[in-house]
Image 1 (cartoon, rainbow, N blue to C red):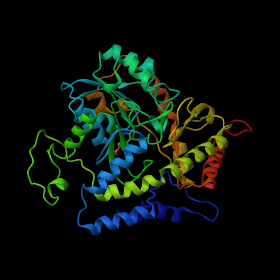
Image 2: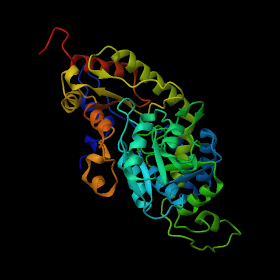
Image 3: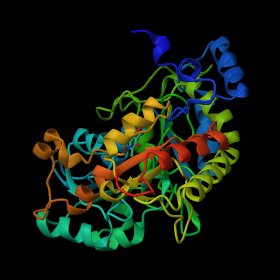
Image 4: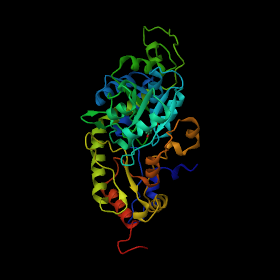
Length: 407
Ligand SMILES: *Cc1c(COP(=O)(O)O)cnc(C)c1O
């Protein structure tokens, strides 16, 4: 593979014409302090889970207002470990929105449970009470539910739990998009039994790879802690401390899903920049909204009525009839202008694998099916400039309906 072709920096240099600046969909910013901290860990003689991980967990827990945080290898592992910690009978039904990343449903399956796909409200892209009620009516009483704060918009946790007739203790959050999201006046972190975050390369706190489970429940935190490293009763770092014993036992078949100190060292320094990055995301979202407000055929994401949007994504909806161009053609034409976009997500019920492994409501998925063909995520990352946002808005205007009449 020619690595130069996928490097965002090189792509920018190659594609940029004299008056056209390429706009990558995402770009992983690793701050200088994080690079220096990573070097120090590499030189320290201890690179896997250890003191940096412990400090990252403490600092992250404080940031999201949770009593406990356990660092793991990914959000998908975080979800699987949190689901396992619920100790549900094998095969129990777990509600999952159909409009999410496949990892949400994979975690349910890997935990030995059965995903029940829930349709979404076409206005928000997330399930609301009627969709949850319909899924429960068709598939029976669920044992638990995973709520996804899509794009970083706050999902109505309490309303969804009520509709599923589940206590919040049996609700988990896929918070991969929701670092910085507030539901009402409270940050996502300890609103349900546990929240699961991602530090994947494009997420709001990028490390490259990594995840975190946050919770107020000490017992759940202890189970995730054990489960992330083979189910062992003592981790290697503790066993190798001077004066410590080598001894441990294995209490369950855990995962190998621990975070390394190299990742944690990067994460700790990235966390210091997060408030500033979030303010940048808010400003970029506002600039898109102002720049696209009057383009016919484009529906824009809204500021939440209560709470706070983390603006992980800026997803617009292209109404094909009104805009005059179908979404996939628009994606190709934007790409030809050097503008990277994406789609979040192909609904799970449209993939044969999930049709086989998940339970589906009898009425199908009218909300997600109406929404999906128009979904388009615009470039969004804190390295994006106002000028680049303006260039994206200009392109969407130029490719959109001709004000002089039909083509
Ligand atoms: C990215 C993402 C995940 C998976 O995160 P990983 O850290 O890559 O495992 C899960 N759910 C959603 C909604 C995501 O966007």
